[in-house]
Length: 218
Image 1 (cartoon, rainbow, N blue to C red):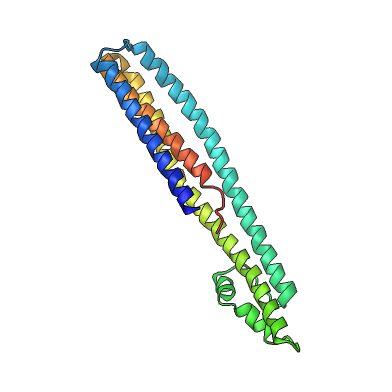
Image 2 (tube, rainbow, N blue to C red):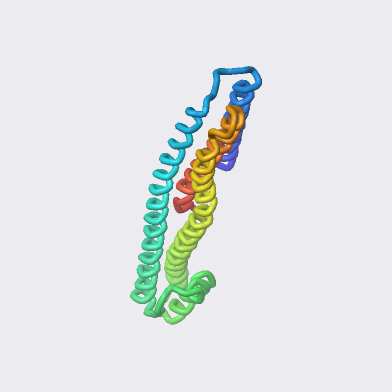
């Protein structure tokens, strides 16, 4: 599996490099090799489209991010309550809430050791097998809880990158609309290229964040 992921990452990287090279070649040919003319009206139209499109995309992205974070937090809360109920009903131990001390007790097998130390049985093998089974269930719950928490933290971190690359194109387009008549065709296209590139980076960041919002398997 690691080789498959490594190969896929190389393919994605090569594809991105090819797209970037193609973009640079088109941009270079447009002005250096005197490709079709680019006028100010075209620049104004594209800036208007960018403002409308990115604004709409940003609104949808905010709604999706809030919904996803809330969904993961609810899932983690349900997992915490289910685990606490499981510990209480199965082992007779009560915890008021999910705390770091509970996580340490699960990692160190304190709960299962304490419970099965007082369980009478004629067979030590039966006790050991049941103890390992209970410990595995608790560790799986703790692992899932940790991964969900890491996913929420990762989403919140990626939000800032997405916001930067989605807000800046809107601000730059608004600014460039004010000075579009003062710039010649070359600079209009150059600044427009920067805005489009930032939009592309913003969309890629948004896609990365959406893909990273899934809880990864251990």
